[in-house]
View (cartoon, rainbow, N blue to C red):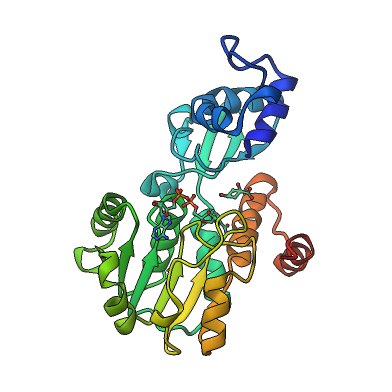
Length: 274
Ligand SMILES: NC(=O)C1=CN([C@@H]2O[C@H](COP(=O)(O)OP(=O)(O)OC[C@H]3O[C@@H](n4cnc5c(N)ncnc54)[C@H](O)[C@@H]3O)[C@@H](O)[C@H]2O)C=CC1
Ligand SMILES: O=C1C[C@@](O)(C(=O)O)C[C@@H](O)[C@@H]1O
């Protein structure tokens, strides 16, 4: 759930924090993002009281919401991140459909891609879900690179514990050229390339036609990285599939119904036109 949606819920229920110095509508974006994690528990309680069936949770609340839940699905517990909450009577249950969303998108979009060695940029929340999906699908080894090396090291240590020591390691940005030369695929799980953060996280000259390249950014669908990769003849996967399938899986949890992903993908294409 976005902060704006949360504001709407707060307007319907009692204010979540009477000590708040300024009404939500007057907050700066910085103030708003600073209070989001702290408000997660109040939000879950308000939504339950108002009769919501469930919620989607987004950055930066996917971890901070966990202490306010009664139960986690096994995968949400393993990942330590929740993007979907369902209510079952009085119980709030946390799920993670980011990783299943990426897994389904990857399996459909690059069905026979070699996954012996993969380089992944970005070891944040979405990066954790993507790496978990790739290793669950059978990837041999993932090299994680992040501008904050400690994040790549922490995620790699978690993946080693969850899968095996040999299947994840934290790489150094200085070794990117070498790592890509040996790799079957590259995944961008950083914000670099978004409309708000233009550019590419990998210089075009480091790409080669033997790589498949996946980007989880979906605004724009064709990032600079994907454009360079496609020009070289690489197989590419955009972020539209992940966002659609994580939503489809959440919808199934909320309603018990399986939505039509083709229709959702077509609809997304009309919404994201850049
Ligand atoms: N398709 C989808 O359904 C989804 C897509 N996303 C996309 O994934 C992006 C990342 O989201 P989160 O993981 O939640 O953000 P985050 O802020 O938790 O993690 C991003 C990570 O990337 C690192 N980073 C930034 N620039 C880098 C660079 N040039 N090279 C290496 N590392 C770099 C940061 O240090 C950080 O650790 C978002 O900006 C969004 O575009 C996120 C969630 C779902
Ligand atoms: O991170 C995201 C994106 C999202 O917040 C959205 O705005 O569509 C929905 C979340 O379920 C997902 O995990």
